[in-house]
Each structure stands twice: as C-alpha cells, then as structure tokens.
Length: 185
Image (tube, rainbow, N blue to C red; front, side, top):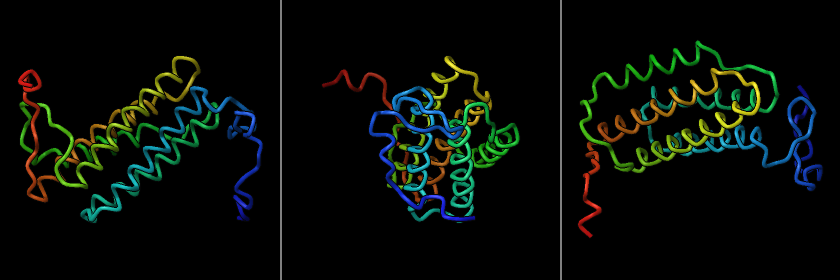
C-alpha cells in the first residue's frame, strides 16, 4: 500500500464543504459529517481513556472498540456502506454482561467521576451518547445501517459499566446522585 496521506492539506474544504468516501462533496455541518465527526471524537476519547493505566483485558477490549469506531466512521462517511453488524453488537453485549456480573446493583444514579480513568470513561460515554444522537439525526434524513445506532447504544452502556469497574478496582467509591440536594442551596 502506498502513502495514503502524502499531503495533509488540500484546500478543497476552504469553501465549507468536505469530501465523502464515495467522492461526493457535502457541507461540513451536514448531518452525515456531524455523525462521523462525533464518532471520531468518541474514538479520541477512548484513546484518552486507554492512556490511563488500565488492566490488560480492558485495554485490549478498548483497542478493538477503537478499530470498530474507525470502521463505523468510515461506514458513515461512505453512503450506503456497512461495516458494523450484529456480531459487533453481540460482542459488546457479552462484554457488558461479563463486566457487570460482579458489580453491585444500582439503586440510585451514579454521578460521573471517581478516579481519573473512570472520569475519562464517563466522558467517553457521554460523547458516545452524543454520537448516537447524531447518527439518529442522520437516520431520520437518510437510510443508514440500523446496526450503527444499536452499536453506539450498547457501547455507551458498556462504557458506563467499565467506569464502575475502574472505580471498584481502584477502591474508589461511587458518588450517587441525591435527589433534592440542589434545592438546599
């Protein structure tokens, strides 16, 4: 394979448009660009999370997820393509069940935080939810692979559970939301 990015700037986007994977051009603020751009942002957030000192099995899982997020971004960048399927969703569900199995059940909402790694995981989770919303907006306007929305939905759940596992592993307590507390001010 030759050089894919021999020149970083092309000036073709100076007019506010960008090229899609099929060669067509679209405005940089289109629903499609918002969707795959937010998936890219999510991938970066997962990279920040992986920069923490995570257990090897969790880091390996997140490395696989980064590859899948890059595939999903490519799928969204090329109208009509599909890279994410049912097997990806099943794998996320299996990992979600495995990591969640030993966690205590929740009776209250958990506030994002704890260790720096858990906080980074919560940040990735909230970006994942935004990516899901952006993909839903795109799906309302154009036909897309429905597995993309399901994948992001499961991934955000997995990131929530991973944040809980990270805190538990570090001995950090979870901060639970207290209803009505903001009324005390």
